[in-house]
Length: 318
Image (cartoon, rainbow, N blue to C red; front, side, top):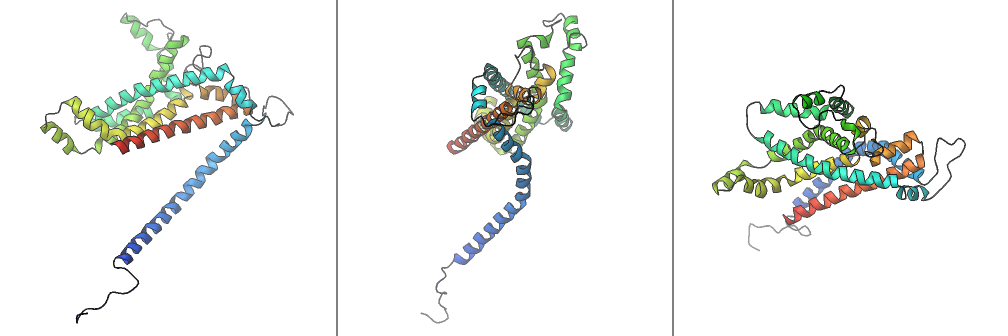
């Protein structure tokens, strides 16, 4: 060993101590993060765990408040058998699935167009961005009542305008027909929820670097090529979040249907959430209603799981 040099400490490899300190800091930060979210997790469990467990318990028992002194006998899977064998439940499932698919598809296209428009630079853009949020901020009960009144042939102004302009649809009782009722529900639902999706997509558009578009313009890419090859791929995370929230909202739709049609005409606009409300608050059959609630939770979790898996696979293949 040459003079002036000292041997390295034995037993501790060079560079191991800084790595240990870094790992220690990461563990401390992770524990601190868990500590911060623990109160919120406990609060969510208190709010959601009891209703979920109570509904699960009800679904395996006969709990009908309209029958006095019956008790709550164990019935096993009878409530689920009743549900799956009910034409009412099957029809509501079909209508709910159709409404979810159509509304999410149309609202996604409208929201994407609105987000692209709000992303452009023009005078008054800030005011317009704030105004777009007004329909989303209005309570659903208010907005649904507003649309129901507008299309009422006796008190609404839509019928008057269509008649004055000699346009199709004048003197039509919109909420008396099956297809026209669904059309009105879709319009009222889109008016409220398109701004919500558009704001999420706008946030995704704003994090896309402008240099990417500059390079595309220098390469002579057209608007459609830029949109398909740059905007859409980079917008996938925000688009995925918007789709998850909107799909679950559409699948659990209740309030706009309750206000506008009350499930009618007949049962043509009844959805799963609507017949679940009927089971709980109209027939007071908590056992049957609990089975429907459990199935709603399972289907909603399945939808969220599929979306997350698709988004993850898309990121891995990108």
